[in-house]
Length: 361
Image (cartoon, rainbow, N blue to C red):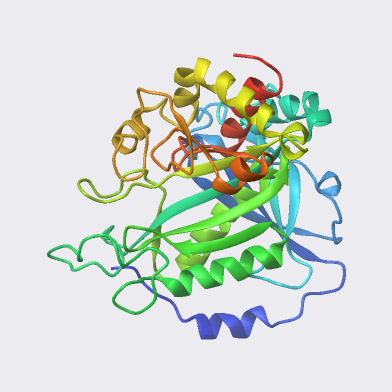
């Protein structure tokens, strides 16, 4: 059982004034798992306006799976700055890249490579919108609101549902939504998903590297908000075996050419390119080279088979979905439904741009 502290007492201290020209900067980074986030805080004697103004810092990489104990310092390079929805005022959240002792990117610093790819494709203005599905759990890792010795009723009434018997954890969802808006993350919506206790939020449209930055920080906020409620967030792509929907990170993608009149031709060309490198994308679309997605991409529960590439209009059982409105208006975007819920948004966006914009396998 989690030890819940008194948030009302905490609020009393958070209302204390901070001296002028001082702020708390929470440095946030992806750890050696490629899935989990870590954070720590330092005091600044100024109010930063851009990430370049912040000092490079370091941490014990031997405790995060990113270094050996005999050479444990890993560097934090600030790359994106957000308002802090927990401490308020002039305090900041700072997204960081991680670098080893030799100044080379750590193995899970996928932002470094993604930035290079986005720079080369900048003239095509790649836009992304990512739909992050997740599952809320009790601290005992049981789905929130589910009977402790059984299962809720079959799927059907829970998607976009309302009512205490159909939705579990809305407080977490609403708090997270407002926190994202406060920070400046381009969150565009949220909804209850098909499996009870499963939810989704959408981030975008974002251009280039901003997609990965905003999605990773939105994940950090989700875990942090859930912590305040004594709830656990799972990004497992198939948290409950059996006749239950898994969780994905459906990725909507477009270029200037796709968004222009008759852009459907560019969309069809992009789909043809994606079909030729399906296996490579599958390996990139979860942190374990496709092994997580094997449990999810079965061809059932609104997924395509992991082994086959497919595309279709309004088809949620296809690898790539062309929305009905896009097919009718002949302009817009495509939706890649293959990325898993725990995929790295930098890797997913990089792969899409390499394949579609740069013709690289």
